[in-house]
Image (cartoon, rainbow, N blue to C red):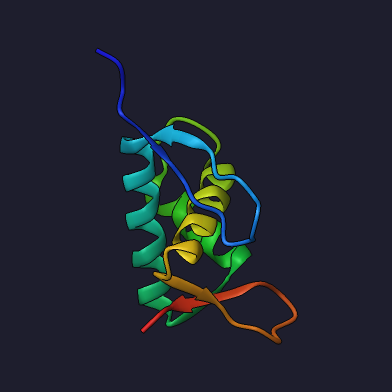
Length: 95
């Protein structure tokens, strides 16, 4: 049986998302949202570290790549937002 895919979105106009496994998407999405909720605001590096820690030994593939891809999708869908003006990319849950 073919694995179900999801086409991610990209927050920048004219940029294309990518097709990834829905299972991996859901795992990373949940890990990102849990990480951001637990911290209130979180830097990109902190996010990758926390997701890697929480999914260790349970995820096949490059966690940083998936975090970047799914994070962009969540920004495009309005679930998380980038805090402007911070030196490092920093995110929070969009209310």
